[in-house]
Image (cartoon, rainbow, N blue to C red):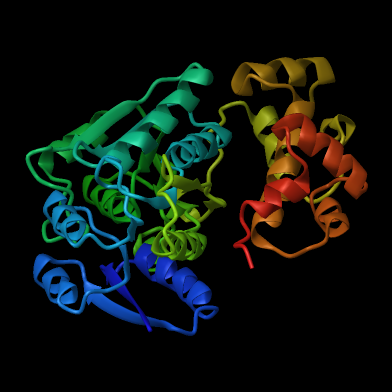
Length: 383
């Protein structure tokens, strides 16, 4: 039999998702014996006594990584807290997660931004970089708040992380503001801080977290929007990689990174912060009817200004044309369905506002450089 150690924090939504994906792969390996233990030094040392053949782990303390490395057993890490130092890792593409969070807030019409991260968390730094790059491209800046580096990242929240200095920081930001937190627990804490200081969510502060932990997102008041991380596929691919390493394969030169699947939009960012009522009406129609073919003429019937005026105002606010926004919304719907459903290409095209699958394929390739089928494949675990 092949003994597989599983070193995880079983309380987190991400870890549970990873384990579900790992289990799907393990179903095809009837000789695997799974050995779950918690992510602490005592449990790992006890696991080492049974000499596992391989380990999949979520650990974020350097001391625990050193213990695992000393076992001289093939292992794969699915945690991105520590810098990559040659240890095989499968995880989310943090840069893309940050980009997606920024894009979501930009699409709300928000023009002031903030990001809350941790100075000693490598994944947080990568997400912040993606957030920053996207705002730079849109000619915007953001305010950044970093939890002190004097304390290691605390996934189990043994202490309330965001204190009085954070309250002052939030209160000082120009409003309305869109703030992204590098994980959902801090999004929940941010929503409660806003309640304490009298700021409305999302009217004064729109919030988007990262990770889409269903419990934390629904516990927030109002419910928290969050970037969706493909945890189950990460678990599946981590098991695939571990199987290869146990068979003698060379570890990959770089981490295996999987893209986020979208933003789960909830009440915390459900706002259009646009002062121009005509542009706000047009953008609302585009989003509400993103599942249908839309033409600029359809929007003009709902506003009281000329096409030239609407185009000019629209470009001033969004830095793109009305037609470009319609196409962006259609393609965003298509991406969501390709990543999260098994609908046929014809059905995806129909529900995303395209006349047929061919037109969807042409538009998709023009924007992404890939076919819809190739895009969908990256979200599918291998059989």
